[in-house]
Length: 428
Ligand SMILES: [Fe+2]
Ligand SMILES: [Fe+2]
Image (cartoon, rainbow, N blue to C red; front, side, top):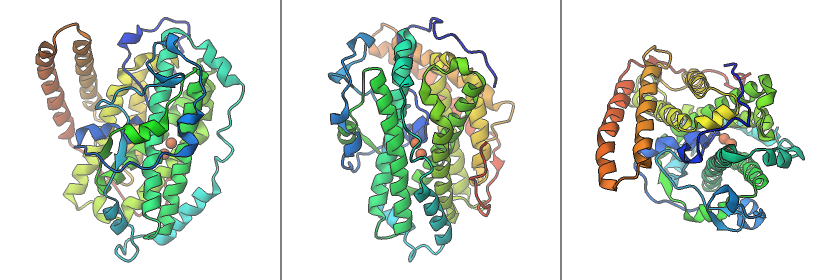
């Protein structure tokens, strides 16, 4: 994946061609995002706004010159929600309590959860997210369309991290009585996600903008996922987040001239948080053996469904933001394929079935989806009546659905094994 870096001065496509946002983390990529678009949503609980991250801390100057819509001085209006943007999630907390009640679920491996809790309490990244004087200067040197796509990247990443924070925090609160060990792990994971979101929001202030996360907490729609779907989706989103961060980090280590902004230097330790979060969800899946059983056809079906939802969403999202990856010297297609293949290998250790991402036809079909998605975006940008646009969109969407079904029905790989020791040695 060694690639040439585009000079930051190299002109990028006009901003109007750049689709909004971008996300990297767990909750990120769709982390939790993405897959949500394929399932039904309903409004859910709205957790209390976290004080550390909420609006009053946003002290940035006005930034009208960058063309962003502001809620008030220095506070960016959040990008609109689409099928592919990071979402906020809620679940059936009563059912979660049943799943993690030691009395009701004899499959809970208390020793494993206690070991994980010790890891989280160690807090390896306690002193990691400390900014230095290079941030502001680097942001000032990012100009023109690159500046706009950087801000959008920061916004989406921040929203995605914050989405993880809200869900984990609420789970930590709700499970306190039923299972204090699991509850504390959730609370400590919400600590990590709050750090990630806060670090990204602080980075936005280098661009004279910020997000009002308290406002978002109260006003953004929450997507409902049943607990078992939360486990599949969150496991994947944490692991794919890990592979995205580490792949970008390694690429920039090999190509230091592409290091446009110092936030990427933090990705090496940052991704270990995501990896640990994924390991925790792996332990949770093992405590619900029917979700990862090789003999359960539903488990296999849902495993493939969530893998494909996450991979397709990331592939389409990233290809519509090619300019961002080019600015970092990354080839969007190579980067995505690397991340998907590695995430799939990791996921195959726990999910009972995964798509065969190394089948020669797999990425041919994924590329066809990108082509059709580009067509859809072009129709959206046309200056035509909505009715006409919808008529043009319909056959393109039908083709996309057909290809997605073809990908889904490709022969999957039998996988899984929930008696392995730990995934923490993966990675480097
Ligand atoms: Fe995170
Ligand atoms: Fe995470």
